[in-house]
Length: 300
Length: 300
Image (cartoon, rainbow over all chains, first blue to last red; front, side, top):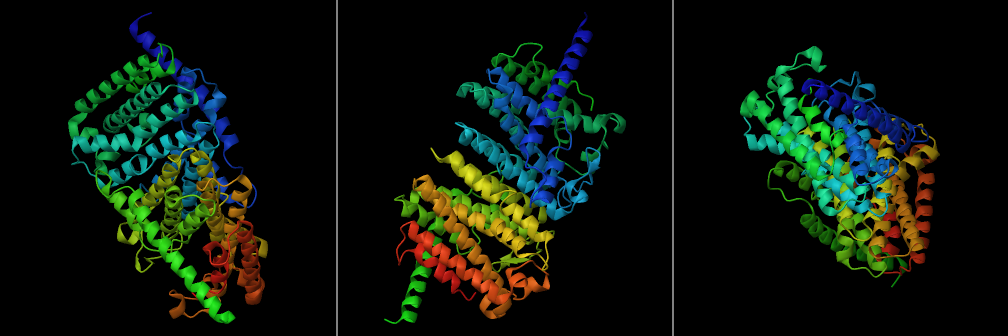
């Protein structure tokens, strides 16, 4: 088998593994979200709509794979995966609001503030964020540790802080600024997903740190590729309007270091992620090993 | 000394105690909120503006008093008090948004979305909520327990759920519905303040439950009085426009059971709170004992 065929085979294996985790994550969320009944049915319905509204569930997959890597069971990983997906879903609901990115559609369906109204969207986001911490708090004995990891990554020095920086910046931002945004807005939460998985699998502190660093590199890789695709892909392949970053005068890696610079940054993050996967003991054929290359090669 | 004079004296003692706790809480928050510097300075400044923007700090006072009641030190109570006040502050920032209550002023200053913009207000609220859980997660060994208590009271079956119900209801709501709203929107968090204080003071499970129930009764009392004052007080005494609930067709106790019915409900909650204060061992002259009567007698 030649190199290209092996590559295609590995990518197909990654896709199959992600699809398996996606189905698992949907089941976990279905079970761990509050039911759309009782006095708070409307709010719970909006929360479920937001959190069960599709998506690739890469974060949940990373929780699960990192947990397995250290000998944990899927059932150990479940509340951690649900918590990460709740936080991701809440961030999308709030980001879609008219005062932020003002998006009417998300994954082909009306956004929460369109399907209900803005007040319900703010509250559904607040409810999902709080629910994530509720889920983690029930995990013994590492609940407090897990809350610390998630709150740190999702809070004002992590995801929320990154979103604030992103809104305030423009295409003239320095490279350092763009990296801070990517790190805080995206990579911190993906790092937390990997660290929570390791925590669920009872990994040692050094292993936890390596898992987090792996996730951070993946997140930076993901963002770098995102910036590249926004400039190079056509709308049909991308599934959304390309060139949006430039139109919105966004701070991107491409605006700062050019297309080749962004591609080089992506390759560097992929290399670092592969090295960290090796340090976690992930071999070829395992998702953690093969995911960086698959992300590097993505076209949409 | 006659009865009226004793009552006035007790009320003055309550005010002095609350003022002392207010100053303590300001110092704790000043120290435990993220500093307005570094890459996330703008967001942190908005978070500090919202959380340090005045207020009576009744919730922090309850954390502190309940902690003391079981022999804990103020320093034990500090992160719990800060977390409760962060959650309260976040709820006000989001409630003030144009899509919710649309308020331009809060405690005489521009609301966060007026002083900055709506996006920063959404994010500052998100940041404060997440910071509350971060603070609790660092408390050992009861961090996970504390997160559970707060997430339960603040989440989609508590404060956030109550706000959603309140927005969806009107003055034709049944008494049961109004009580569910009061319980979820206000009383649950005040119950959590008392339970967290008891937890900080290493109270036993039954004592924690009594402390929570005491806070819940206080919260219901507070809401009942609020509904009464909105109908009876004049603007100068109240410091805000009275009659707003009726104008907005809000679900209130007065709309449901009339003014006397609401006064009777308040008296009942005050009596239950006093009984629970006694079960916690709080004697006359202690804030926990004297607060129900002081709230019952408030004119603004």
